[in-house]
Amino acid sequence: MLKKVLKWTGIVFGSLLLLLVVFYCVVYVKTEAGINKVYDIKPQTLTIPDDSASYAYGRHVAEIRGCLGCHGGDLATGEVFADENSPIGYLQASNITSGKGGIHYTDQDWIRSLRHGIGKDGKPLWFMPSHEICGLSNYDMAALISYVKKQPPVDKVTPQKSLKPLGRVLTFAGEFPLLSAEKIDHNAIYVDDIKVAVTADYGKYLAITCTGCHTENFKGAPSHSPEQPPIPDISSTGKLGQWSQDDFVNLFHTGKTPDGRVLSQYMPVKSFTYSDDELKAIYLYLHSVK
Image 1 (cartoon, rainbow, N blue to C red):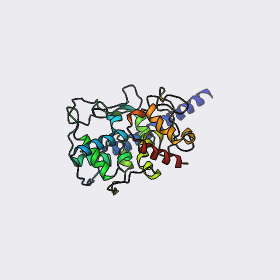
Image 2: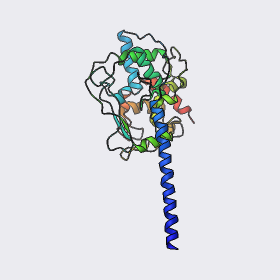
Image 3: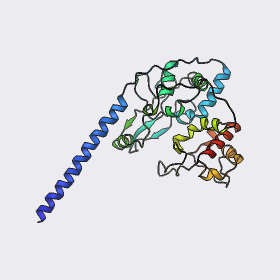
């Protein structure tokens, strides 16, 4: 009897192991196919301005859209999203200057990267949130490119990116936003400009940047790491729904909530150089999200 039990136990565990192996083989093949897919797209043509006003405005766009938050103030010292101890793999924002270890992009390359999440080789960029910024107006996109392409070269080589089994499984399951190119409508047509106003519509245009952390419905998410607090609900159903417009604006000036709580380093409000009118517009939109 004991031999039969051990036999069937071995068969069950062996079958489960085989299923896991087959599952991971499927995961590996599918993720590799996505990573190595070559997109045949023709980026739109934009006229990139060369004046100082456009450069200054482009820096503002880079700040409020999180470019400097990820790639660093010099656009070379990128944030490490997953280090060598991470079970996901190694991911660090790349050096996007023209220095050693950086990139050498034409205007079309910048458009392909920012609008489509695709590199010069036609393959998807890793962990590049192009799905959050592809909807920039043509005016804002051109100004952003005017700024980033003029940054001084910095010599900094970023370690090779890699993806561990857990990272592949999460990517396969749609729980890890590795390849934004898969989320983008590559045939979309974008508006030339968008009216700047203290309205919920303009706030929606700006608040797309918030979705990277607070999720697409702005309802927040669990903590991404043990040292990071849970990501809060910033829709009308969260605490923000109880704040006044002035409370929200002051949060970005002081780094403190209306009740005096200091925000953690994972919400670096002072690095977002929104104007008060931009913050008021975002507030109006978030308060409209039920």
